[in-house]
Image 1 (cartoon, rainbow, N blue to C red):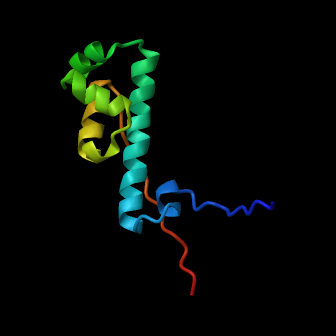
Image 2 (image 1 turned 90 degrees about the vertical axis):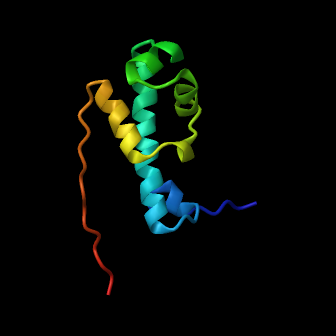
Image 3 (image 1 turned 120 degrees about the vertical axis):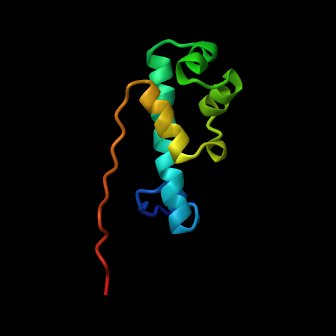
Length: 99
């Protein structure tokens, strides 16, 4: 049985068929959530301690750790990262248009 491979676009959400705007938002949120999960693990924080540091409830940290992406806005995730003294920057890049 032959396996067919297809090169990805660089955005797994776009590759899964989400509309371009939603795929862009999901990718940003997934990256920010991943950074928060790494910081919590690197600092050896329990969910309770992470909640206190982030100014949220423990169930909210649980949702974050479990990857409940639909429950978090970009703004909320940026605010959480800044509470961990992480500077968040935005970089834009124009796509080449194919005529």
